[in-house]
Image 1: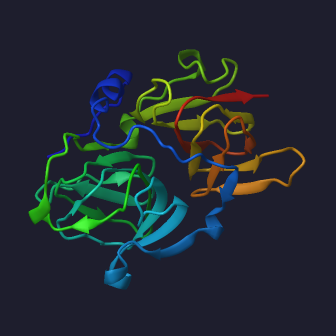
Image 2: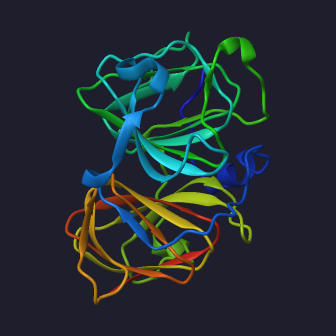
Image 3: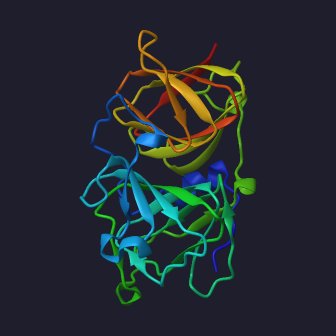
Length: 279
């Protein structure tokens, strides 16, 4: 049975160093925004129709061999049959309670703000236990397929379930890409901070935050997990309100001007460095 794991820098550096999924993303990101009310929804498994969770596109195409980020909504009481996926995915809970584990495992409900990783080829079930249940899924390759457990295999990666209470938040004094005078915090999730390697973190903006995020890499994608921000690529353009689960991507050397009235958590996936500064 999977255990809740306390994320620390040493774990991130070691556990994911030998991941079998791609460690870079060759698709350059552009300045783009998808607000929560403009997400395109369909079915995660179209063949099952409304028996399947709903899926909402943020970037990429999960049906093709390319990186993609998408939302998944589960009805209360949903429980999938045991299955595997052909590729590894990572997930962050946005609403409700989700369980992702071996079919014989005791339920370990992950609340909003929690993180999990499901390796390609490993048999598991996914279940939901609240009135509204939503997660963000990140894949480095595709297509995202559901296959029977008879096709299970071991790709060398291992599952991770991290309750939000087990995340380790670091402050600006510990992180070189967060301006030292800000109250922004970050929690490492996966990847490598070697040059040009994919990595993902959560950043937590305090209530009242005003500042900017400058993307220094070819690929930068961000998903609002909780709270909300006002966002501009230029101070000359109108502000867009990005409440959870909105998304924005940024081109290399692009700057996002943001403010947050309430505490906000953002998932950031990049192919290199970025810089967060506050006014």
